[in-house]
Length: 574
Ligand code: GLC
Image (cartoon, rainbow, N blue to C red):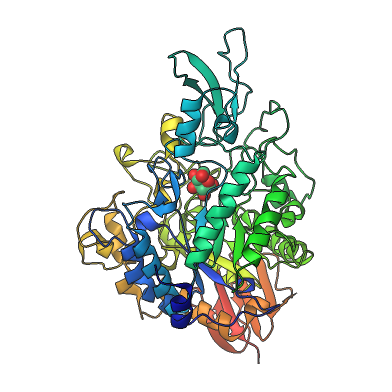
């Protein structure tokens, strides 16, 4: 492991100072390690692959990368089932590979955030194996959520909670003497037992895990299921409202997004309990002991935004994902509303607003924004889905949405492949699917594999340059040759060029620290000034006259000086 000193010497990280901390303005690129770049040719991406491709991310113009889990794991939920928090899974390489990747990123001026999964471990984790072996009433069982079943023989689960991936959230164990015994809670797959965050021992372990990675030099953590961890006392029964199938586990996002209501929906007893904030205050103090503005970014599916803002109070996390924005349909009124509220609500606690359109859990926005049917988060789409859009129409819309997002003040998250305009992979064969959602619902929900397909780098190479062989853990659609990075790099009008142009102009005009000044160009149009840049997004069918001035970014061609439907332009003010 390189010493912290060596890393610091080689670092080209830009300045971060009070009020202008790097995370207030950063564009953070999500790397999904299994699908980004494969150095050894086994069909699964790895850390050496990431290291080799980091220069491409520097060229793109992002400020930081966030890596989904690469730690030791049986991979039953693609690494979100961690069996050793302080080591690298051999699939992805070694700790030395991690250190090389981190040092390379820092030398390029890119910060690195890693995923931390504290709500649950893998059932293969030594802590869980010890809990099974030690039996009921033991301190080892107290690290997880073990309970007796109901009924005379304990055969009824302790409550009615359902797993986010479908099916019951409880699993019954066979005790050492061969009899059926206690049940353990798993809000996700049965291979992901929930930890008991009422237990100080668990707190101490996670402080140690944070320090392990902070000592290696990571710039922060994306905290998985940051609205979970603490459960309501007594674990009361709970039935989510109908259509509450999002990763929010029953929190319907529609009222806020469609109807502009800011009424708090009922809080499920397993999400957004007040106790989680104590954990983040504790972690905040751990991070504070390190130089360099280390961050916590919460994956919290919480609404309304007023409530979500509690995750980013000054002594808690620095950022939280804005899933209300991600789930807002392509509608001018709804977008303006969520943008204004985000800026005001996050601003009220001194936090930057964040923006995100895609990640490894949702249908890629180059498909999603033009779907006509209902699409609950995490349920996915596949060959039998109806209401699928024309890919070219959907890509235009996605580009317009990205150009809108990157003009907003605050910090934005990008998901690997969106800069290539990748659509969701819809026609994956059933036999290739790997998301536990698919198995736990007997194929009723396709799940998230369609957004996780390895990305194309070179159109003419095996696996489109994902790796040196033709192997790819999920099959890549043949049509993806046209999306490969090498056929887009430097090509005017390509999606990649649009992302590069937008990221460069965003930085040059300091848009992340700007303020929005809306003006009216009609019902289906979003128009605002952010500092010396005017941004117009046309969501309607009627063309809109483009503002005068130099065009900095255009998500699609202008037609006779007008902005057509689903095009966003940035113009330097005259
Ligand atoms: C988060 C992750 C998702 C994972 C789940 C359980 O929502 O983003 O991929 O399946 O947590 O860890």
